[in-house]
Image 1: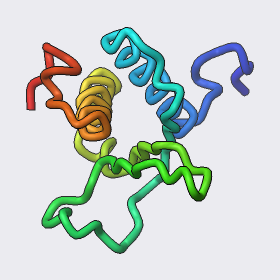
Image 2: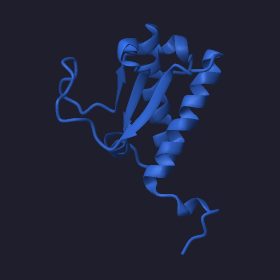
Image 3: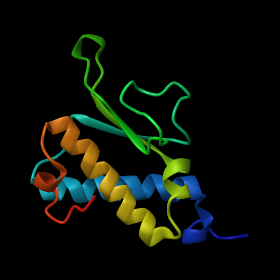
Image 4: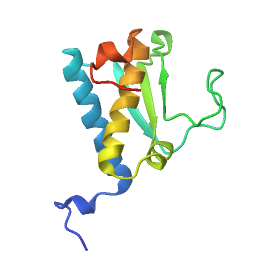
Length: 122
């Protein structure tokens, strides 16, 4: 048994959720403004019905615009299994996760990823 205070106590999905929060906080620092109007979520896999612009590869994340009439904020959903399948370790996971979130935030703001993160490389 591992005590709750040790990192090994958390599940892989809990560690991934924490990595998403850390990456989002890092992007907020780059923007010099909070992303309060954005909800970040994690799903294991994308739904089986791809968006019209998604052809070929399995998406790693999706941006859903806000719908004020329905009371929905902007949402960025990260798909854990496809993202983790593309990396070898946690360091690569953190880099890819940041890249993916930068792309989604840039899409949401109508800017290029390089405008959000000067170190962005696709």
